Length: 151
Image 1: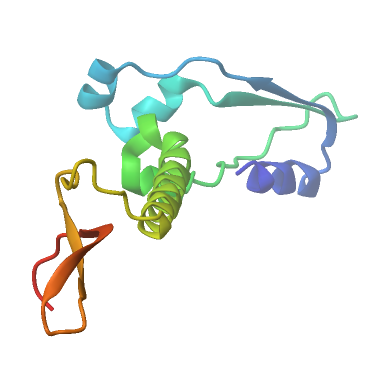
Image 2: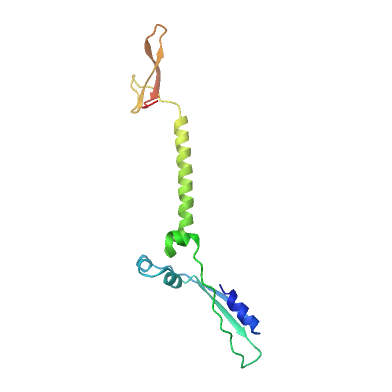
């Protein structure tokens, strides 16, 4: 954003003496984020200040008229606003990690062995497994099978 300023001063014969970046440390509150425009929030947040000092050998040299380039909002600021633009990537990564964890949990729970019936009774959601006794009848086989609906 400072490039047009630097080009204007250097083009007019001025020399850059100091370029000092002063970081900001304040975030706007929730009320401020509701009341203020995104531009005002960025100013209030104080992302930092770039202080440029120029010098010219000619004491009567006039500083050139230059305007800093406008600040372009990033994609996360478009999604979450000025207040939450730093949190949106963290939330996205958290959601992805939660989905991966959930899929791993489901895969591990499906691969667990089925429970055994206690006194012929299976836990809730499970039914006793049956096997053919050889004469066309079904007898319990000592396992539990997950109760499922549909085919």
